[in-house]
Length: 128
Image (cartoon, rainbow, N blue to C red; front, side, top):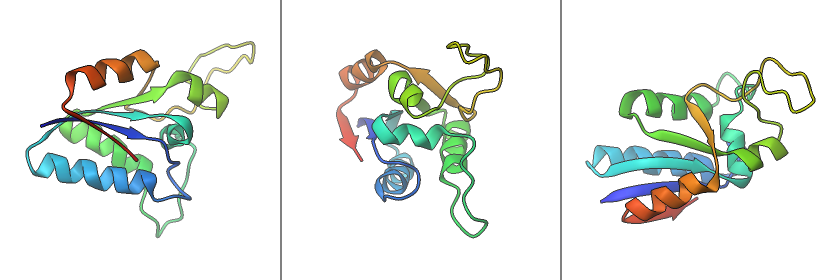
């Protein structure tokens, strides 16, 4: 089966994101197709490169990045939700004159159209 995962929980403070990550890993191990992961609402906080967990905590942002590197899973971040939560790409102006953004590597800003396209081609969408 072909899956799209929708993550609406922040990287830390709730179980949504870590459960979504574990589910994604399980899908890939069982030879299902993970088309993409779409981060929406507070889920966009998973793409904040400035998040620094304690040394003894699981680094969820790094884990998402490694999932992308190893399996080429697309990590889409809702642009509007990201802007509302202070997550921006490098060299975005927005009248703030910011040269260095905080969007983590391997995450890609996109719109809800990308989520709609993913839903259209997948068999299942699962929200965490």
